Length: 113
Image (cartoon, rainbow, N blue to C red; front, side, top):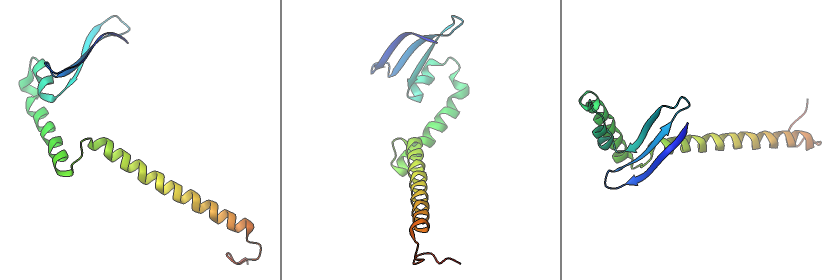
């Protein structure tokens, strides 16, 4: 895959465009922008317009209710933080327990049978 041309965000057309060429020599374009702008590029937009608008409205409602600008990244970050905190807690507690067992010769912390 090779990049033929790249057009950064243009406020007039409200999207970013790139032209690519695959390994077989086929050229195609990719574009990012708001759902309304991308729908304007599609010839048969009536078929998918309702579904796309419903998805965009659902995401807008999610952002409005929870106040997140980037909800998926926020959820992944929150999950990562919780998993990291739990793993750190378990590992440090395991290290403490092993250290106490190795160094507690008098049996003050762990009683030995």
